[in-house]
Image (cartoon, rainbow, N blue to C red; front, side, top):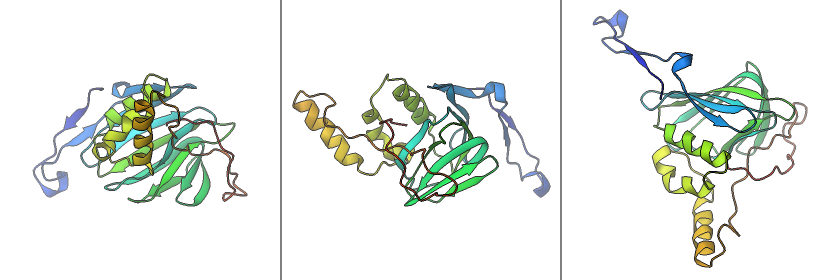
Length: 210
């Protein structure tokens, strides 16, 4: 993880009552490479907020359908365009747009077809999830199965609908000597809706764990 600088606050009310500020320089952010020239840039973890910058290649999936129970998640589109599934709604958000996802709302997202997406992602209050992003990087590169995340849903406050069924299928398949056969992986955010028809059911993309 990159070097983070704690800047002590003052002792009077105008200077934060002694609280320390956090400064993370761009060069100090840990980078987790993703396929198609994408990457997580991990800025800060836990505490008041967890923050990362996510770069996605054109049409790349960002995350399958999931929800958080303890935190609100904010997505600010720094560049390009991203497609979001928010409960039953589908919407495309372009540069300068903002998405705020409350606890409990199932959501998914990915870069829009034909363009990449640059996202600033903030989870508040923060949950220590740098380990989650590192695991996602390994999964994206085929170095780990998606099922590796399932036992850690409470730890990272990232819950995948139907995950218990998928985990049971994985165990059953393994015990039957079939490996990963029969295991249904979660759907990804589907890049396919358009600004003029944001509710259109998008085409089914290839299975991808993140």
